[in-house]
Amino acid sequence: MYSYVARQPILTRKKETFGYELLFRNGPENAFPRLSAEQATNKLLLENYWSDDIDKITDGKPSFINFPQDSLLRGLPTLLPRDKVIIEVLETATPNDSLYNALRILAGKGYILALDDFIPSEEWLRFLPLVRLIKFDISVLSIEKVRNFVRQHRSPKLRFLAERVETHEQFEAAKAAGFDLFQGYFFSRPQMLQRKEINSSKITILQIFAEVCQTEIDYNKVERLLATDVSMSYKLLRFVNNQRSLAAKPIESFKQALVFLGEMQLRRFVSIVATAQASDDKPSSLYQLSLQRAKMCESLADKIGLRAQANRAFLVGLFSLLDSLLDTPIDVIIEKLPLSEDIILALTEHEGPLGELLYYVQNYDQANWAELEQQGILLDISDEVIAASYVEAVEWAQSFKIE
Image (tube, one colour):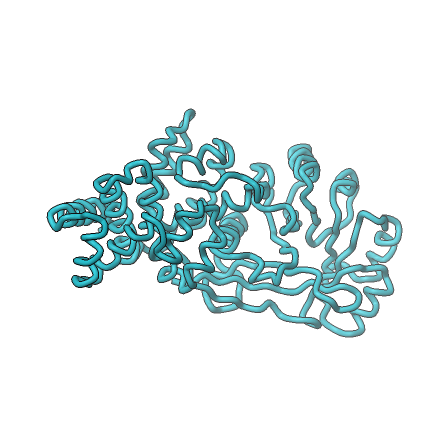
């Protein structure tokens, strides 16, 4: 399955790229999908910020993302790194006290706020000190009508963006009126990008969602559920990686990632996944094999004196097929995850005890008997032990199959 996103560049007065507005698409047709604004935003976040490297889409530039009012009130923008995103407040938002307080908190945390398709009114004036960018749709409000507003409110902290710039004359007129940034068909139509996407199991998502809705979250149960879904666990670690400092301790288990997030951020993350993927397809056989490998690695680790590393062995097995799921080399994917060095070396080089264990399990999958016989001697694994672990892993993985 593929995910789709359209990006449209936002340019400076010198026609240099300042950033990109990202627009969710649910198919190769470059048109807005039949989804609510909130669901479209959630899918955009899930399929781009937590499934892939956002810098590949935006060339390292800031991304402009629309947030409907409900998402702003629930603090969903705080799930994103503030240095990579500009939060657009939709024109449908109501300028009430609740919205003001939500934006004040976001601005206080260092997020850049923009008012999208802005129409000046008395109710919005108190919001202006909170925002750093105002977007005017010049097909709705002419440049002549907004010129005075731009000049009256110009300050070093506030920029103005002209949307729907479709001709050279409009570009020159907007520059003369004091606009700083520009967006429209005169420069570029939204460009479609297609990428391989990992699906999550509907049942697992719903089970996790039900758990995080409890008054007290049972982290052990959430961890067990996450361990059955390679997509959710991958996105969770990508999300955690965006939240961590570079000096933070590497993640070695899902439990550690869950505790790091805390209840509020975990609930927000799961709510986005549940909303965004409510209608996605079932996982393929690759997911089944990922679960099988994870369980087999964990089981064998316990049997060959690596009991203390059983959790890491499970992660190694679970993520061993991410390259196939994402159509991306494993070493590229690993760079995005906050994993410990022994896990990274196991996945990329088959080095260390965990790497040898993974290599053994992969050979067993592929029926490479000569390799198995030689490595079995090195790891001191009997045929009976490996066969029992394999049967256990297959039965365990099949217990999560969706019919």
